[in-house]
Image (cartoon, rainbow, N blue to C red; front, side, top):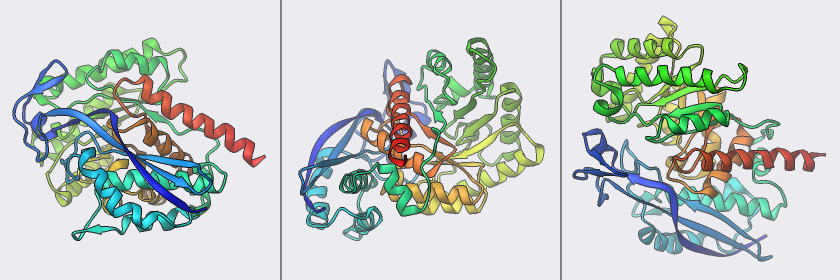
Amino acid sequence: MKIIDIICSQGKTGFYFDDQRAIKNGAKSDGFTYIGDVITRGFTSIRQSGESISVMIILEDKQIAYGDCAAVQYSGAGGRDPVFLAKDFIPVIEKEVKPRLVGREANNFKELCSVVENIRVEGKKLHTAIRYGVTQAILDAVSKSNHCLMCQVIAKEYNTKVLNEIVPIFTQSGDSRYENADKMIIKEAQVLPHGLINNVEDKLGYEGEKLEEYVDWLRNRIIKLRRDKSYNPVIHIDVYGTLGVAFGNENYKKIADYMGRLGEVAKPFKLRIEGPVDMEEREKQMIALRELRTIVDDKKYNVEIVADEWCNTLEDIKYFTNNKAGHMVQIKTPDLGGINNIVEAVLYCKSNNMGAYQGGTCNETDRSAQICAHIAMATGPDQILAKPGMGVDEGMMIVYNEMQRILALNKLMEA
């Protein structure tokens, strides 16, 4: 079935763009915004409204397939593409993408993704957010052309099998790390709470004491609120490189020992620490996480290290995986560009004994979250992020409900 047109519309995301460098350098909170000067190029304020673009593919039988272009909350940081503003990029889609897809048959996901991934403008690939949203629409178009689910398209083209149970959901709290943790526990999120530990003075503590107090509180809160002892979530804390800021980026032993202490506090629950350091460069980041993993494994600490910053693309994910840089990689979905790369990243991690966290950002949309649920159900990562937003309920609802629909419909269609 042919693609006959592509239409774009401007949208909003479920969160905001934040200048991560400014925040890590001590920008002060002021209500829901921040006071201070921007550091990252492209920002006009430290926190600004998130934007998206819906890309709608019109098929010749008048069916409409769509996906959403979106970029991560901390755009422009950690080697990522710049801030994604709809007014700047709708013309790019109309000029560079539309002519290359209109008239083509929507019958092969991989082939059409390859077309988009290989577009060059002034020698550069399209912004990751464009490739992300356009390939979502392509997946939807191929599924509609073949009268099947999006996850079934992936399973067929990548020789996988759609799961018969949902993927564990990781929920994130934002700064409401106490109240939102209660929501997560009541709804039995399998992985929680993210925590947003992105400032040493206010959230980590100069000796890590504030985070240690929080992990202790969270452990006790889970035990108090859980309905039965069978609920044993993973505690997953994102520290945004602040351990390196507090203890010294290359003081691997001190950082590892601190994480080990947190792991003891978290017991009987498993602990994951995401982004313990930010070395401001890919190779240095890989080396740091590799060294930290070696110490953690040698001492058998109750902690797993999750790679995030400087591990953005499919190539990066393979590089960190091959070097055992951490125990798990966050596959930050908008950073990979085409969603075909997400599929390949999950499968690569699984085949090379690296944990696969199919993540993303609070700064996505309901549509990108739904499509990511299809990718997860076709590839089987260790966990999937509840998104968008930081409110817990909405993101968890979107991802959970979509995976449950997949279970019901796939079972019916296979019968």
